[in-house]
Length: 230
Image (tube, rainbow, N blue to C red; front, side):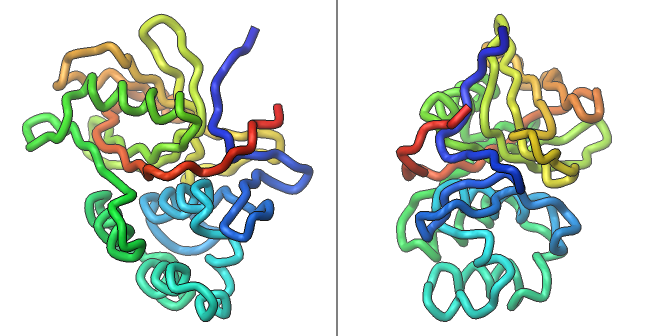
């Protein structure tokens, strides 16, 4: 029997994957690279903000909406460059978090890091436990991981299934298409009890290769009170 835990604010309908956005209505949430222009970090951040009801999808494509909401104006002007396309160079998570907190006027976003041979805010095990705690609270979490080639990628984890020490993280990956009948399009496996900070033992199912989930970005507010309808 398939049993998994998913975030609250996620809905399937006949058109696409949706969430309740800042307007209080269902809005498109999945952003695939190519829908606009930009890096996986920015796409993942936009999905995270929609899940947390700070944005509607329409805020990403309609320049007029910035006139009625200061936060939307900041998002459009800083990340979307006046809707001429998402920022091509990308940003590291710390910069994204700092910008968000500046826009919001509160410290609502936080980045946790565990990168071998660098300064780390948490251990590998602590990072993995934080991912699980976030999803147990039915909130999404943005993951940053890198592979053996050193190339990094970002996704948004929206649920998980536990199997022994493994957490199968169900993710929205902006680098891949999403079927109209799915709520995830990639799976990242982590051994959430591992204490080995140097191990590259996480698995990216899409590529079938080992990766290291090294950074997460979380937002501390409650996204919604609605339950997952499936």
